[in-house]
Amino acid sequence: MTKRFLAEWEAQCAVLMALPHENTDWEYILEEARDQYRRIIEALTGEGVHVILLCPDREDARDLLSGCPENLLSLIEMEYNDTWTRDYGPLAIEKGDSIRALDFGFNGWGLKFASDKDNLVNLRLSERFIIEPAQYRNERDFVLEGGSVETDGEGTLLTTSRCLCSPNRNGGKSRSELNVILHDRLGVDHVLWLDYGALYGDDTDSHIDTLARIAPNDTILFTGCRDMDDSHFEELLKMRAQLTMFRTVAGEPYNLVELPLPSPVYSPEGERIPATYANYLVTDNVIFMPTYNQPDNDRLAMQTVRIAFPDKKVVGIDCRTLLRQHGSLHCATMQLHPGEINSTVAG
Image 1 (cartoon, rainbow, N blue to C red):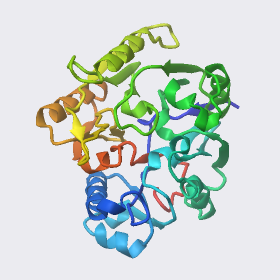
Image 2: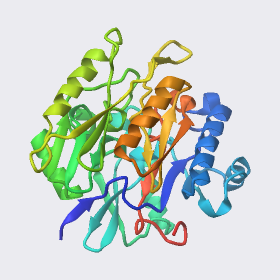
Image 3: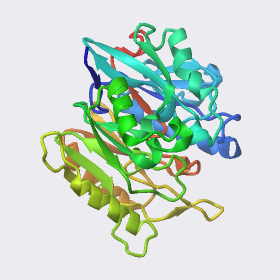
């Protein structure tokens, strides 16, 4: 029976998030981080998106999110190391006439950070009948982060060699070995390996969702850089050149749409951190776009994404606090598709 890895823009029923708490890396700016997540969740629920929120204390979370519609917010008490649900949440495939929620291994982005609790989140959700136990599949013998893969839902996968081939994830397997594994696990048969593109401050070894995103109609949106004096210029120019060489299954070039690179953003310690507009979230009716208090760039990015998704509304959310932990909006969210989770939680 064939498998099909679902595209992000296919029908959804909820978005999975995790609230910062004192035992996460957000502890040093906890109130600012909680306010950041409150604003994101209010924006999502305000547009009719159901949010399933992991939290250490349901009553505390309910107080924080009192402005959100109760029917669009499910609070799940759970232990977790960090809040980047994109990388430890389930990946959805279609097999036959049902959906499978695949639980891949997560090892803290190549053994950089603690991940023992994150790595058990999907299993715990299944044990508590939030993920449908019949649809849950344990794939944790293979490390695969959601932010490292993009698909068109038609058998094509876009990823980066720096991430998937890194020795601290799956022992440094070759592309040919990984092509077989990705086909067996996700049903993809056309893998596009991006070799260039890296943002300063990125802890993920070049996750694809910071650099390039697949969109409908054989379109790829990508992070560009027009400033020759920017330290990203050469690397992103090489990435753009490689993207022009990629071909669809039918042998045609992709429609390439360039997103602007935000002006440099620095941490209080003076370190450049990985601001990117490619880290947007696609939902049924709305594209949620991270913004960085850069009016011209923010506006251009929101206008640009409409080229690929002309039928969707685009809503900007200020994500400067997320950058403090080297992530952005897509990293903090994971879409869930109908059939993955119990319909009594989010139908």
